[in-house]
Length: 449
Image (cartoon, rainbow, N blue to C red):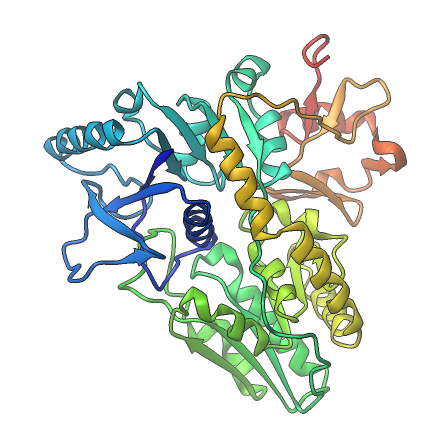
C-alpha cells in the first residue's frame, strides 16, 4: 500500500508547530514501522536550503500554497492550476490519499483513489469545510468530543453521508521514572503552548502571581515559549510579550523565562523540568495533548474545563477547572503538588490508554479498509422526555453553563441541572433561550433511532 500524505501547513524535521504536526510525525513514523510506503508533501519554501525528513521519509516541499493559516490557498490562480497538475501526478503514484488537517477543495484530482481525511479541530475554516462540504472515504477524529460536536451541529443526512472514526492521539513512552520532586524555595510552572492568545498566557501569569502570593516559595518561575517569527505560520498567533500582563508578577519576585521553540524530541526534558503544567486558556481543544504529555513526564497539570479537556477529569494528576477561575487553579494546583502519588497512577493510565502502538494499529486498519462504516453511540445529558439534550460544547460548572464558543452564559445560573443517569432538568423559562443559543439541542422525533 502506497500512501501520499498532504499537509497544508509547512513541515519541519526538528520542530512541530502545535499538536497536530506532532501527531502527523507519529503517524508517519508508525506507518513506516509497518513497512508502508509513504510520501509526504507540504508547501514550497523559498528559503529552504536543505532536505528535511521525518524518520526516513523526505518532506517534499513542492505544493503551491501560501504556507500560512488561515487561507493557505490565497495564491494566484495560475499557482492553483500548477498545484492541480501536481496533485494528479501524486494521485497516480498513490493507493491512498491522506489529507492531514484536510481543507483541500481540489477533490476532483483525487477522484480515482481512496481519500482519508484527518480532522484535528473545528476552529479553522479548512477543517469546518472538510466536514461539511468535502467527501472523504474516511474521516479520522482524535476524540469523542469532536465526534459529538459534529453530530450535534449538522443534520442527520449530512452526518450519515460521512464515515467517521475516532482514533485518540498517542502519548510517547518516556524513560523518566516517577520520583518525588524536591520541595525547595522555587516553584517552576510550565506553559508549553504556542503563542495563540486563546491558549491563556495572560491567565497563566495571573495564576503564577497568585502562587507567589501564597508565600510558599521564595520565587515562582513561569517557563513558556518565545514568539518565533521565522517558525510562526499561523496568523492567529501573536507576540504576547507585554509589560502590562506581568508587571505585578515580576514585582513580586516572579520570573518569566521565554524558551526558544523546543524541538519535539526534547519536550520530555522540558516537561520534567517543571513542578506543574498550566493549560488555562479558552481555546477549544479537540484532544488535550499537553496535560497528557505532561503527566507522562511526571509533571501534574491543571486545565480549563474547555473542549476535550473536560474528558480528562478522571485521570489522576490532572485537574480540570472552570475557565477563568484563578483561585481554583491555585487551590487544585497546591493539592496536586502535595499528592505526588497521583502522578504515578495517572502516568500508567495515560501510557496504556494512549499508546503509540494502539494508535498506529488503528490508522493502519483505517487506511487498509477506509470504506468500512462504524456505528456510534451518543450518550448525552437529556430531558426525561428525550426531546432535548445538552450540547457537547456546553458544560455545567458552578451551576452555570460554560459554552465553548460563547463563554459563560450568566442567564443560565441555577436554571439547568445535570442529574445522575444523564438526566437533564430544565427551568421552563430557559428552554427557548437555551435552544436559540445552541445550549440545548432538539432531538426531533424519528431522527435518531
